[in-house]
Image: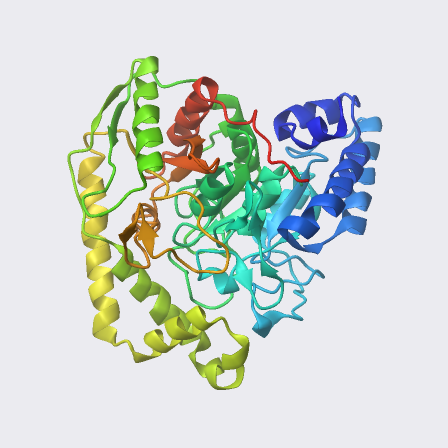
Length: 472
């Protein structure tokens, strides 16, 4: 097996090879670090590597295997952490100059769980400032490029995580999603990303109140089984997170292969409000939807529609960012991303009535999906309305030659942060320009397992891992 093949191996297979000592964690870690040195200067996926710590953890992982010790769920597997999650003693910036020199004194709950599971932490991945912008670009580390086309964005805000996985610089990446920030970059970079049910994975500690009731932590990976393995390690309640859910006592990686016998699946190209969709995306989406019938599942157009939820999500974002950052504008304005400055200003000017109106509308959209899922088991949509767009901009102004609003390219993500429903993105094809296209799979409240099982079923009949980005 050559070095590149090792870099693109599944984490699940790697775990078995480490257990049997066919490969050592130290060997694997050095191979990935070698690839990092070649690729990361090109794509800028990692912002703060932690290689000496990774080497130490890999060495200890191999010792544990030789000594016959009990091994963790992710034993010896190189893993990355988005620069949003604190790691004790490691710089954590949140993609902002405000925290450029921040050194946390405690681990994020998920980081602690990953460490306890035996993961080898390679470092922090790049993100947008406080996760607000849907592309990965900030004033400390710059922009993360798309591995499939270096002139295109990786998406955001977990763009560094998705680009690293697509490029073979690590096997598991911890991302965060407050409005599409796992699904959008995973879609753009051609990898698998899942936003589990709100509360399934704890978020602690939290910096400020922004995204408090919207943020989901979850895996970004190349293989669905790797996501299940990672979720097994990080799910479950935490006393520090008031929203965390009780454990369902489900082992996702063990139950992944059991395909549901009967499912009723709805699909929608617009959720009742999206105006424009790229022709390549539409074609690949509709072709992919029909594949689910091969398992004997019922597939039909979804019989419902909602009003565009972007305004209510934006109100949540701006009001809470305004509360957190409004007092810092005077001193830090010149060192804040212009889009974030506008959001904070809008939040400071918003009224209590504005926020209350969004809360009321959020309940309405939740009820819409509650009624929908009385009759359906899943909902399928495109992940984004177009493939990855150009670097250097926060949003495209046209789709298929038609002028569109700033949020028209990502109409399918906000609703599932507002409702807390589990949602995953699966690569489902390629555009005429060779860019990945994603299919979104949305499940019932708390039903992460079915989303994973159906994702795995789709992966089996339409695998995407045979393609790898080329770097000259």
